[in-house]
Picture 1 (spheres, rainbow, N blue to C red):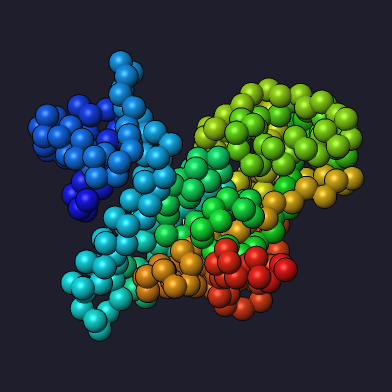
Picture 2: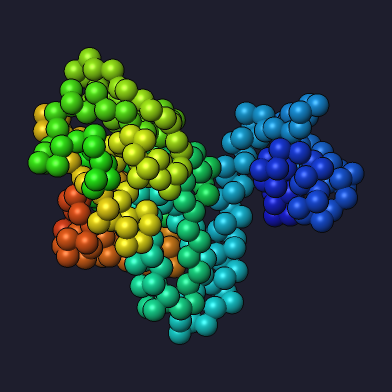
Length: 329
C-alpha cells in the first residue's frame, strides 16, 4: 500500500464514480481500476461496491476512507512544514463554520490572521450544522465550530460560546406590535416561521422546545440557506428563530431587524470548538484554534457579538477523547 493508492481510493469514494475519479486524477480508468484491485488484494477485503449507479465504499472501505483522509492531510501538512521558512508560520488550515457563526467570526478572523500570519492559508468551509458534523466525522477539518458535544470522538472539543435564540422580524414587520420586547412561546407558535430543515441542529433545538410544551409550529417554509431564509423574512413572508448573529448575514444590515426574546423558554445554543488532539495538531492549526478563542472573547467582551456569552475565560487547551473520559470518570 502506498500514498498514491490511498489518494486514488479517497478520490473514488468522494466522486462516487471511477470515471469521474479518473478525470479528476488525470489517470486512465483501467489503470485506476488496476490500482484499486491491488489495494483490495493487499488489504484482503473488498473496499468498493460497484453498481450501475456508481461506486460506494463497503464497511471496510469506509473505515479505510476515514483514516486515509486523515493520513493524506497529515502528509500535506508535513510537506508544507518541511518547505516553509522556519522564521514564519505557514500552512493550510481547514476550518468549518456554520452560516450564523461565519457572520460574526469569519471576516474578523480572516483579516486578523492575514495581518498576523501572512503565510497561513485559511480554508473556510461554510455549511449548516448537519453537513459540518458529517464532514467533521470524515476528518475533513483541522478546526471546526459545531453545536453538538460528541460529534467526533477522535477529535478534541470544548464548549466555547453560548448564544441566545431570538424571534427575528424586520423593524417594520406587522407580525409583532412595535411596543413588544418579548413574546411567549405560544405567541411565537401563532406566527408563520421560516426555519432550516430538521437535519440541522438549530431546527432540532427549536422543535424540542415546542414539543416540550406540546405546541405545534406554524411553518411557512423550510430553507437550508441563511441568506435566502433571511431574505424571506425581510420580505415580510414570516419570522425566524435564530441567534442575533443571523442579522449580520449582509454586512451593515443588522439595523433593519428586531430581535425579540422568548419570555417563557430558555432557548440557547452552545458552540463547541473542535480540533485535532494535542499530540496530532499541526502548529498552524493550533494557532488558528487559539486565535479563534482569543477573537471570540474580544468580540463578546466588546459587545460586538450580541446575544452571546463566553464559556471560557482564557486560552483553552482542548483535551482529546481519552482525556475527556478520564476527566468525567
